[in-house]
Amino acid sequence: MRALIGEKMGMTQVFDDEARAIPVTVIKAGPCQVVQIRRPEKDGYAAIQLAYGEKAKVTKPEAGHFAKAGVQPARNLVEVRVEDPDAYQVGQTLQVGDLFQPGMRVDVTGTSKGKGFQGVMKRHNFSGQGASHGNHKKHRAPGSIGACATPSRVFKGKRMPGRMGGERVTVLNLRVVEVLEDRDLILVEGAVPGPNGGMVLVREAVKSPVGGETR
Image (cartoon, rainbow, N blue to C red; front, top):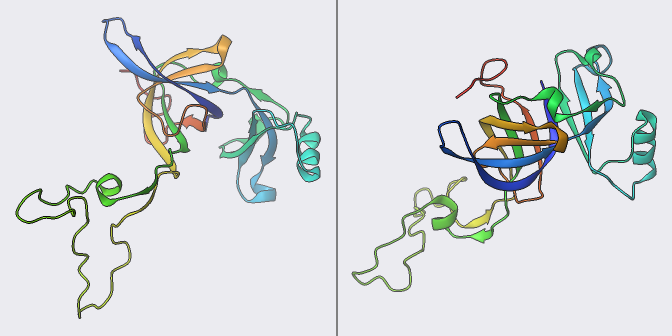
């Protein structure tokens, strides 16, 4: 599993050979350092721990963890499952040009934008109530929630107003349009979750053939 931690820079568009405009998200992916390696015989699974970003102040346990790996303290730590942990070394630097190339399919994971407390029309795409026939200031209300003598309660999971956004979201099978190795940038087709400047995890797609596919 090829993966890198990155930062969403924003969206723009590029043009292909047929002059078609392709909306892309620019992600600054890596460089990432390998801080720890998990092996099946010791930990029960195979994975590597990646570090990205800079962090000025760290606790003593964090400082010891990074010092043991011989890397600078990082802001973000993510553990990624791999098939062969022996292919990596502690302290190794992974860059975007070593892992991804145009035409690949990737999955991008991030934290969606927080929307605060929202009503049912925005949160659940309700159509709202009629605007005439005696409706008075209840146009965006959810209406009846179905609680009467039977069952005398509201069922769990009922779609109602509440907190929206701020959740971990993964967008699958985005096509890599371009990789700019000298600037550690990767351009993926379409939108990815989160605000500009938010941390994202870019990894090889799990539901497409090995190496991805071209358009």
